[in-house]
Structure formats: C-alpha cells, structure tokens
Image (tube, rainbow, N blue to C red; front, side):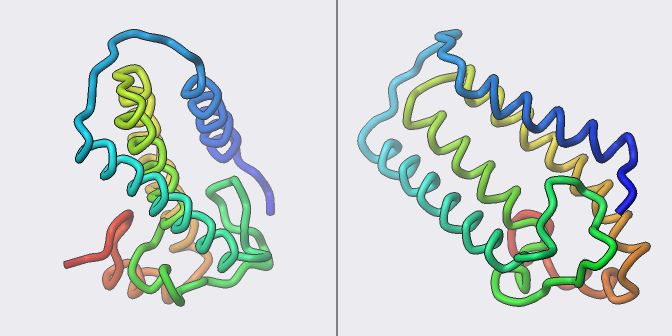
Length: 150
C-alpha cells in the first residue's frame, strides 16, 4: 500500500483529536441528571463493544489509514452488513457518551470535531474503496455510513 499525503494527514489529525480530548480543560461544565448519565454510560459501552467487534472482524485488513491495504478484502459480514464504518461509529459514541457523563462542553466540542473528521475521512476512504473493489458501490447503497439504513 502506497500512502498518500491525505492518508497521513487524516491519521495525524485523528491522533491529535484523541490526545486533546483527554486534556482536563474546564471550558464549560454542565450537570447531567441520573437518566442522562445512564444513557451516556450506555453510549460508552455500546461504542466500545461496536469498535472491538469491528476491529476483530477486520483482522488483517485493519489499518489506521483510509486507503485499503494492497492485499485487503472487503468485509461485509456481521456489523459491516449494516454499517460501513462501525469503528468510527463506536469511537464517536464512546467519546460523546463520556463527554456527556463527565459534563464537559470541551469534550463535546472535540467529539463533534472528531465526528466531522470521521465523515471527511470516510468520504475519502470510500473513494479509495470504490477504486479497489468493484462491488463496493452496491455494498454502499445497502448499508449506512455510521448507522444502519432505515
């Protein structure tokens, strides 16, 4: 796999957002009631489970870069049967859930930036996947980007 500049830029930005997320900055704190806190914890748990299952399913196809590996195959089973980018979904759910539970507007802001980055990264990734896999367009029409199609 020959990396392009965009591949590296997306991964560097993603790593930077991961790092700044864990800075303890009290830009604006808010309180969540008990119900919201339980929902937030649920988002974290669902996000971790979704990401973990997705990582295991990708196996040798896994790469932090959006361009597919030269020897990769298209994975469309299990959660990938419903969502094209479940790892991104899991990470975003976990980040938003923790931000809400912790009551940090700063973490919500970073989570929002991460969601935007994942949208742009997945858009670029899908263009690369369309070039590599002839059946990717059909797969894309039947599955949702971050959540199952309704």
